[in-house]
Length: 486
View (cartoon, rainbow, N blue to C red):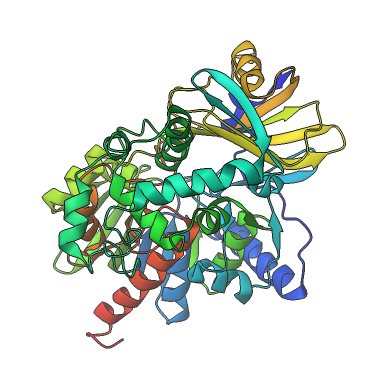
C-alpha cells in the first residue's frame, strides 16, 4: 500500500495542470489566468505601492472580488499566502486523472458558480458514487447492504421528518433561503439547538437514527453535537426541501477541467495584480487609508481592503483599530468543519457504490469517485481524528469495515486543518452562531470589507457562496470608493 498523505503538503503544493479544455473559450480563459499568475511571479509590485483595493486571500471569494474590482477600473492587488490560487479548492492529479482535494461539487441551481462555469465555457462531469447502485451502512455495529433505491427513500423520509419542525417541512423557517433572517424569530428559536439535540427529539428506530447520524456528521464535518441544527434546515431549504435534490446539489456534479481551471479563469479576467507566497500579518487604518503589512515586513496601501480569508483564519491577522467584538468571538470559536477528506484507491472494482457509518466511526461516508482499470478510487470523509491516513493498518481496517476484503493500494489527501491558511474545511456554524455572528462577519468596518464562503447569505461554505460573497463585496467597495454611486 502506498501512502501519499505524509507528503500531501509538499506533493500537492500547486494546482495540477489543467485538463484539455472542453471549448476554445475555456482554453483561452484558463491560459489568461496562468499568464496572470506567471506575470505576478515575474513582475511583482514594489513595497510601498498604493492601490485602490487590496484583496487578502486568493480563494474563490478573493479572486472574484479582485476580478470585479479590476473590471470596474480599480487598481487591485491580491495577496495570497500560499504559492497557488484557489484557497480551499485544490485540483491535483492521481493516476493521470484530476482529483479535487478541497471543494469539489457544484450545481446549476447554485447560480453564482454556474454563471462562472458558463461564462468561461467550462465542462461538467459526475461522481459515479453520488448516484450509487449499491449502498452499505453500519448500524448497531453490524454491516448491511442493499440496492440504493431501497434504502435512500427511507433515509429521505427520515430527513424530511427531522427537518419538519413547523409542519411545513421547514419552509416557514427559511421561506427564501438566500434571505436567512426573513423569519428571524423562527431562526432564533431553532438556532440554539445542536444537530444531536434535534435527533434525540425524534422517535425512530436505531437503524434510522444511525443513518441520519451519518448525514449530520458529514454535513458539519465534526461531532454532530457541535454543529447547529439551523444549518441543516438551511441546507434543506437550499436543497428544495428534498433529500435527493439536496444530495445532487452537494456531491454529484463537478467542473470537468477542475476547480483550479475556474480559479485561473477568474484571475485571468481583468488586470488585478497577484502576489503569491505572501501571508498578511497586519492591517492598519488611519485617515481613510489602510496599510497592509506582510509576514516579510513589506507594506502596501489602499483606499479599501477586502479581507477574504476563512473564518477560522481571521484572528491570525492583527487589525488596527480592532475588529468588532462579534467578529472576534466568531473567529475565535471557529466553525465546525475540521474533519478530513481523502482518497483511497482499492484493487477491487466495486461499481457505483456508497458506504457510511455513524459518528464516531473513522469513516463517515465514502463513495466511488472513479471507476478505474486498476480498481476503484473512493472519496472518503470522516470526523476530526477519525482516521490517521499515515497509518496503513488503520486505513485498511477502516475500509474493510465497509468493504470486507478490500485491498488498499494508496491513500492521499490534504491536511486542511493543519494548513494555517484554512484551519478547517467547509463552514458549518455552531449553535447560536448564525443569529449572533453572520451579520457581523459580513459587515464592513470603515474601509475594511469582508468576503468569504463562510459568511455568504446563500450557499455558505460552498464555492457558490464564495463567489456570491466576492461579487457582492466588490460592488460595495466600488460604491464606497465612488462616493456612494454604484
